[in-house]
Length: 253
Ligand code: G3D
Ligand code: MG
Image 1 (spheres, protein in one colour):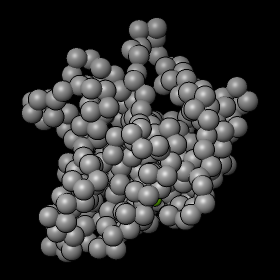
Image 2 (cartoon, protein in one colour; image 1 turned 30 degrees about the horizontal axis):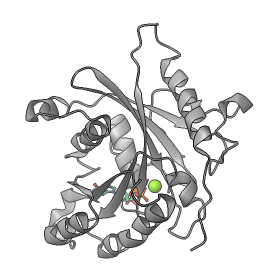
Image 3 (cartoon, helix red, strand yellow; image 1 turned 135 degrees about the vertical axis):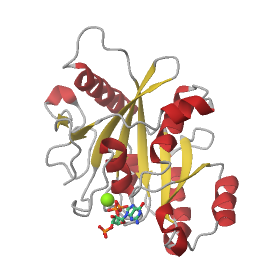
C-alpha cells in the first residue's frame, strides 16, 4: 500500500479551533471549555459505522440514509464527572475502502480510532487486521491513539458468527479496548462512547456515573460542504472552508 497522505498537525489544530467556535457561537460567555477529541470510525462497509454515529448523535436508528460517500463528521458533546466537558468529533469514513489513499489523511491526528465489525459477518472481523494496518502505518510506534474494538449488531446475537473468545483475543493481541453494542437498539452504545470520552480525558468512572450517562444528549452534526475528502487546505477556517453547521438534527448524505 502506498504511503498515506498526511495532514500537518497545525491544520488539525486550526480546524479544532474552528470547531470550538462553532460549538460556542450561540451560547453565552459562560459556555464551558470543551476538551476536543477526534474519533475515527473504521471498518468494512455495512458493519454499522454510520448507524453508530447517527444513533450516538440523535438517539434514533435510521434506515433512511444512503451509503455514505466521502466523509461524515459528527460532534457529540458529553459532560463527564467533575463537570469535564468533552466534544467528540466523530469521523465516519463512509464508503472508503481499505485501499483508499485518503484513509491516512482521515486517521491522522486522531486521538481515538474505533475498529468496528459486524458480529454476524466473519469477513468484517477478519478484515480488521487490514484496518489496523492503516492505523499502524499512519502513527509511529509508541505514538498510537486510543484504540477500541467494537462488535456491532448485538441485537442479532442469534446470528453471531464471531465468538467472544475471538473478539477478546484480537483485542488482547492488539491492545484494544473492547466493546460490544447495537446501533439498532442502542444497547451499550452511549456507554461505550462515554467510556471512550472518559478514558481520553483521564476521568475515572464509577458504575453510578455510567448508569446516569445512559440518558442521551443531543449533539450537532457538522459537514464539509461538497467535500468528499478533507485536505489540509479545506480544513482551514481562515480560507472560508470551515465546517458548516447543519443545525441540531443529525443528517447524513
Ligand atoms: P456502514 O456505515 O458501516 O456502511 P451502516 O453501515 O450504518 O450503513 O449499516 C449497514 C446496515 O446494517 C444497514 O442496514 C443498517 O440498518 C444495519 N445495521 C447497522 N447497525 C445495526 C445493528 O446494530 N443491528 C442491526 N440489526 N442492523 C444494523 P440496511 O438494511 O439499511 O442496509
Ligand atoms: Mg456508512
